[in-house]
Length: 432
Image (tube, rainbow, N blue to C red):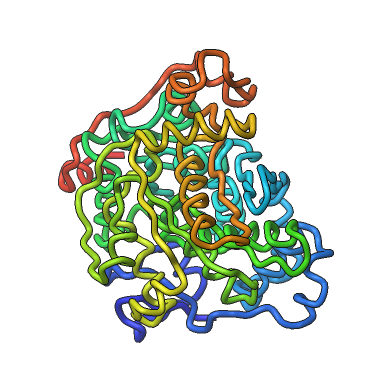
């Protein structure tokens, strides 16, 4: 299969180029020339299939023309080695727990798949691969875990100074080995702009053999479709879910749209954001106005210029009407987020993280206007990753910290501080 740029359909590349180079030279994003569907043979028995079988079917639909079945099965088996269970809080009120992977965040699915697919694509290559990634919190930890000490790779993670939680920061900065952390004096949008500037410098990108691990990379995006289908099969037969997605860079929601393209019956999507509400504003007004992000307690969603918006536009043929009919938007502030954390605990004895709390609140608003809807809120990270916020709302010792997170607390942070300056960043890359 070939892949084209969202900015120029005439610019087309093969799978290896799309995945390893990540970003087209025109600053668009890669999309498949043909969006695949899953046939009747899959949908006739999809509810009886395992999570891994679902993952293989989706991966084969997107990548099967280029990657043999045995390699895809191995990639998926290494990706989906933990569950994504659906938890029911009340009638029509469901939570999809996506934090059971090694770094306790939904990004584990995409990062593990991507690391394995890249390893297959570069088998036999003798050049070191440099993985460059910007993170607002969870992406960096998942990528660091997936690529830690993988031969032939080095990982450079850019994160905004003072804008990730303490335990998130340790996941980025305490592994060592082939993982390097850059603490950027700016926002996530600044980090993302620096990463894109490196890819658009084609001479630099080629010299360093750069690839991206952000959701601008299709290898990160496609495996996130797995759990939408897995979630829907956990609902009673005949129930069409409304997926409520806490959203920042909008890769997760785009993956849900790809699942619908594959044939998954979905009632509606709800994009739930914090005060960085450029997409809900677009859905309401028809005007897309990126702006500098503002810091919130749901830091992984602090994105003012979401990269995947261009993919969303492409999937809807550029039609605002079509997008706003398929996706509803809600924005929530920090006070409402904190209240939602307390309410979910009081009503259901369930600890929900600040991102999931935004989704849960949006789900309540949706069901109030659509009685009978079955909402599935994506709980994107374990609440222990945001211990300061959780303890402020629920009290000390409100959570048991998973051991794989607790062991990081005493490790030393190692990071290089850099300004949000493209020339300085380029010089740093060239000096490695």
